Amino acid sequence: MNFLLTFLKGIVVGVGGVAPGLSGSVLLVILGLYEKMIHAIGTLFKNFKKNMLLLLPVIGGMVVGVLAFSKLVDFLLEQFEFYTRFAFLGLVIGTVPLFYREVRKNGFRRRYYFVIVAAAAAGTALFLFNKNLFPVITDPNLWQSMVLGVAVAGSSIIPGVDSAAILSTLGLYELWVSSLANFDLQVLIPAAVGVAVGALALSALMNLLIKKAYTATFSVIFGLFLSIIPGMLNENCAINTVGQGVVAATLIIVGFCISFYLGDIKKNNERLKKLFAKRT
Image (cartoon, rainbow, N blue to C red; front, top):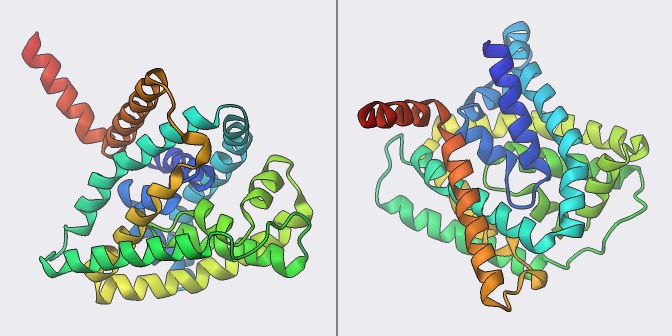
């Protein structure tokens, strides 16, 4: 049962890896897997069997989630971009209170609000000034494919760093989505090498930071996470009529409710049971 549940959580995380703004690493935090994953990867060879028992269902689920939903996300963004982006915006906003709870759980003090604000400002400036820094890459060489993998690993390992935003900044997002949708092994194989190298190096670093400075580290990444939310909408999301405004607001609310509910599904199920018990 634990294996299956972990596998299903991995699928959810995988969906976050291809959905704009819906950071897979943040979903790891909210689903209670992040610290376990970071520790397992960072100490992989110290207790190989135990670590692999955790990593295999999560990674397997992530692979299934990415492969199963990349075409769907690509289709929705191409055919229904306005509605899709507002739905994703609601899903992301729904993770904010859950992520904030994780930031505050271990010795949070008022000074960390300044860390959050500073990180949010730095993240906003980064994406505003670097958005068009690199041209879109459609025919990558070996090193560019490996950089793609390292970037994906970084956005997966560091919560609050949106893979779609990072890859777009580097001119690699379209390549990532299309190579997954078409299962282009010429790109995916070297990218997988980049993912492995990046994951091992960054996991060791994050494991150290979490142990030494948990609240400061999560305050920074929470601020970075907040900074990417405004960039989820683009010029194709302009609201021109009252009807569009109503639809956009409805999608945000629905997305918020779904992600907030799934963030602590066990506790929320218990609350619903108590609520229905009182009414009956």
